[in-house]
Amino acid sequence: MRNLLGFVALFVGLSFLPPPAQSQQQTILYVNQTDATCGGVFPCFTTIQAAINAVQAGATIRIQAGTYRERLTIEGKNNAGSMTEASRIVIEMDPALVPGSVVLRPPAASCINGQGILIRRSKFITLRGLTISGATGEQILLFM
Image (cartoon, rainbow, N blue to C red; front, side, top):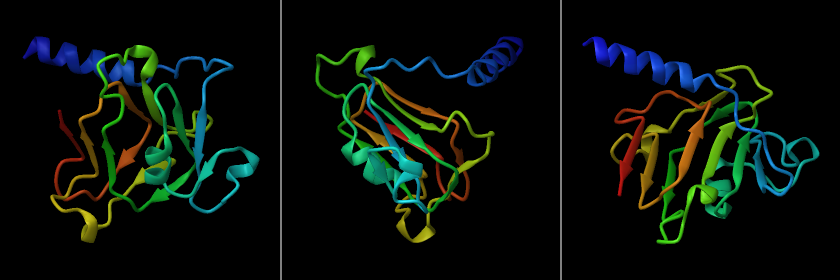
């Protein structure tokens, strides 16, 4: 029990670390469901799923404030044998926002098994700063 509490404390502590510095060459895809221009940044998507479908290895999806009524499926990303840590895809709340500003609330009708996020046959995926609310099954389900 003591080791488990230490692990939980370490995990919680790590989850509050600031995101790593972005390199000048990194591709960032933006998401804003109410502003189709994402405040003037490009490329801009109105759904998180559309950004996930378009993202390539090594890119970041940066989500602007709002409650997104979506069930996300991340499938077949970075699953080739030559993928490395440099291929990591980051799906994150805009780091300029306060915690809780990006909420994923999957609609009940689209949740086949109630998951909020389904990750299947994908490697090097990071989710950062998203609040998942209302899933009737697992918040995040991972299949390899």
